[in-house]
Amino acid sequence: MNKPTFTEIIIMVINMSDIQLFQILKQKMGEQEAEALVTFVDHKIKDNNETNLNVIATKGDIAELKVEMSNLEVKIADSKAEMIKWMFIFWIGQVAVTVGFLVVYLKK
Image 1 (cartoon, helix red, strand yellow):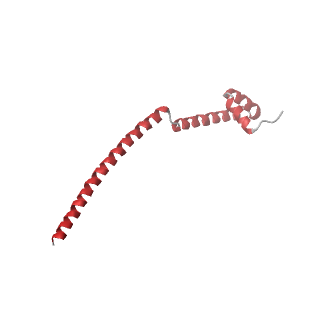
Image 2 (cartoon, helix red, strand yellow):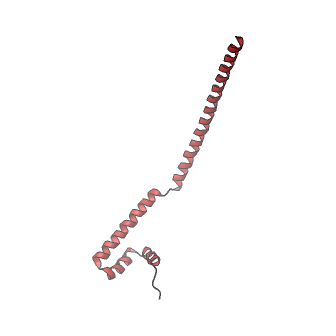
Image 3 (cartoon, rainbow, N blue to C red):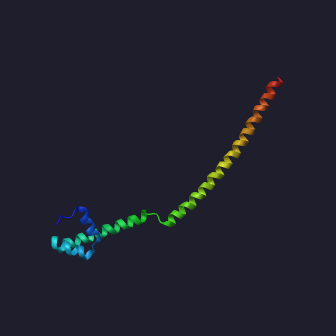
């Protein structure tokens, strides 16, 4: 029979229960070392799970982001309209000043 690869061993360990892992390690390492290693692995798995739960976006998170993005789109559209309005007012003012200067210059 072929010797299992490292990946196959990891998959087997992941699929084992804590008790099965402890029994196998106890035969190879001794009871105290096996218990310490199983406890360490459990803590690491729990830490990784907690970290993943903090990082993973849920459907609720995605729905909230969609609402926030739609609100931002509305604000951007409002800002655009406001900017166009003020640009138009500025252009009218510039045209009036230019016409005023032309009238004063041509009268002389």
